[in-house]
Length: 408
Image 1 (cartoon, helix red, strand yellow):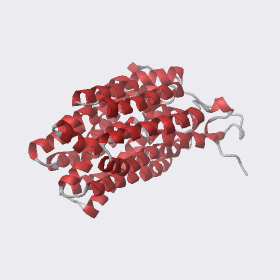
Image 2 (cartoon, helix red, strand yellow):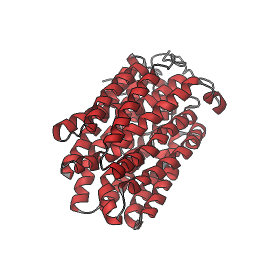
Image 3 (cartoon, one colour):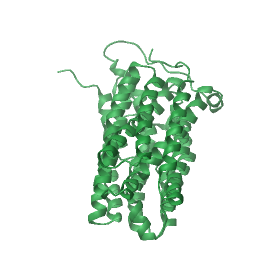
Image 4 (tube, helix red, strand yellow):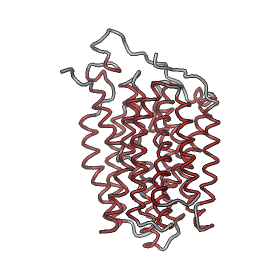
């Protein structure tokens, strides 16, 4: 039987690691802890959500530097110490936190010390291993993030309901330290050349050498019109989508759903992310990426509108499914479009800059959603605003030019 290209093992290992990244285990999971934390510390939801802002602001400041370090020393060399720090910091939440200000400090430290446990090193490695099938490989790897959003809500809700929120953080820490860290250490390789291959398994098929673009500078990047279009797109998308993600469970509980049922809706959103990331990756290799993005965002706009109408039960599952399509698309697009407009040689630096745009939105979105609830007693106003913003991003995608670095 033909030997499986090792790049696919890289993809699977990356998928497992991405299911445990700070996006899922710190930012995404905070919504599950929101009600227990507000009760324990007698705080408003906006106060608890502020922890995610400390995390995302710290991450936005750190990510471009992490990208440069990965470009210079290697992605795996950044990833492994970050995973170790992340697991220890999650455990420290359960062990040390007795006031919200302590939670803020730990979330800020996660943004600084665990920045390399996010998608950047995984995406950089996969970009090295794949060219013609890069979209599919990125999609499969990013589906791991969807898996995280799928299994985390019901798991944590069960632990919180039957034990405590502190046991929930101990569980997350154990998964990072005893599953993600060993798998990443054993299976990931920075480049295919380390094991005698070229991208897309061309080593045995031809004597061609991998084409590498010249490294580009920070000043060259920020002079590109496409950079600023993409920056604005990802900031707007993340404001809407991750504001909803972090408040979905308490939003549905407020409408009368049981905690376990609300967590199941959040798991449905995770399933949509998982499936769409793999599927979108396939389509990115076949069609112009902005066109793929427009379709998924328009469908998600319908889901946001449904939530604004106050849906619960089965309609809430449908809304979560539609919204998950855009969350599933966003990270695929972030990595894929970075490689196609700016190449691979400076991928870490450019991706870090793009990721900071994503973090601008995620730092504002959850707090804005929480503040809207605290002010008006519901999320309707901010949901309507989000639907309008999603339509604006569709128009921005229409402004993007042709790829500068296509698969050829």
